[in-house]
Amino acid sequence: MVLHGKKLCIFLPSLEHGGAERRMTLLAIELKKRGYAIDVIVLRQQGEFESLLNDAGVPIKNVDKGGRLDLLGAAIRAKAIFADNRYDVVLSCLPSANMFSTFVKWVDKKTPLIWGIAAADMPMDAYGSWAKFGAKLQNFLARYADNIVVNSYKANEISIQQGISASKLCVIQNGVDTERFQPDINAGEQWRRQNAIPLNAKVIGIVARLDPAKGIEVFLDAVHLIELRRSKSKERVQCYYLIFGSGDSEYVDNLRVSIQEHPIYGDRLFLFENIQVDREIYNAIDVISITSISESFPNVMLEAMSSGTRLVATNVGDCKSVIKNYGNVIPVGDSAALSVMWERLLDSEHDELEQTQVRNYIINEFSIGRMVDKFEEQLMASLLQKERQDSKAKMEKK
Image 1 (cartoon, one colour):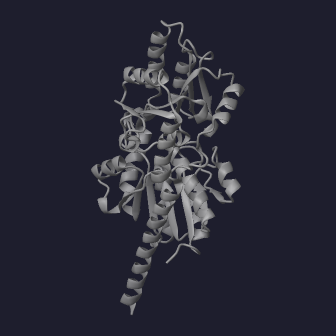
Image 2 (cartoon, one colour; image 1 turned 60 degrees about the vertical axis):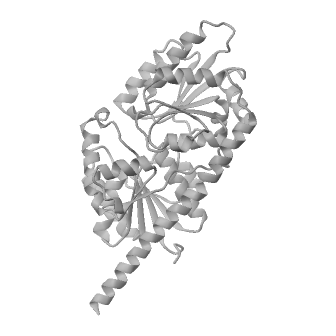
Image 3 (tube, helix red, strand yellow; image 1 turned 180 degrees about the vertical axis):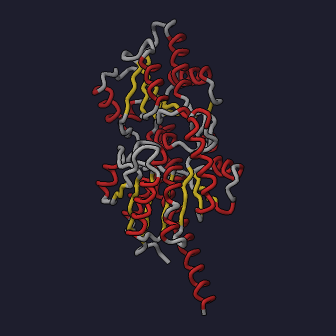
């Protein structure tokens, strides 16, 4: 049995820049390349990844959900999309899309529904009552998902602790487009020139959604600490600190103010919002930081390693097991340890052999092709399970 001729859809909240959104966008594009009929459904058609899907010829269907209170109308529109298209398999990802994807069961309860859960141990107190309610509702509705794909072994462990049946769970770790993210010194230097960053400067960066779980405050504290130490030595090359991310919430508004009030903001500390981070940016940066206090499997980890950029990450999710000895892992929330690690890396040589070893490891273990292969296996298993159920029902009628 093959998936050719079957109609598939991937359901997302939006196409805004984020790890889960990038993962599922890449999956849709790769499945399209492999000849499958696939649509992407979104609750809100906005975001940087829309152009990637358009370029690949992947149709986007928009539920056009309004604000938080637009629940009934959005549910009716989502159900109508399912009724009009009659998908053979529905694959959703992230809480809001997961919840709305269950309406496919109202159209045909036999349609295989696969959920994607891309978070682990989220600090729910930082998100307010609405987010807490959504998390509880997702756990309740998980009974309607035939299978649930998580992107890390940590997320698998936590999902079981939260009451999700282990028999439904499947771990498919993230993959990265190793052709798109690769060492490219010239591209990195060009990006520095375009943004007035000296070629001889040391650059530390963070690429993350502006979100409480990402620990941006830890990054800012570490900037303060390393600046205090480096300011005592006039011979050291100056550091630049770059934050790439976006978001739309009261938290983001407050965080933006904190960043802009930093003493070196606009001089050597910069915030780049709503920018699609590609290899030229990774190659312009000496050290990429992951400062999350909660994480499952950050795509940034693979993108940086594939680009040959040095990496420091907090010990969250699957970071430590993936990074192994190819990067550096520090305790969660430890800005002092982060600043010390930055300094050690900036004062040491980064040779081509080291870059090559890291990149080869990522190509062999975390290519986008390997990830898509595993998703295909899961889609096939879901369809086979449905066919067995249909055959059994027909036999019972006879």
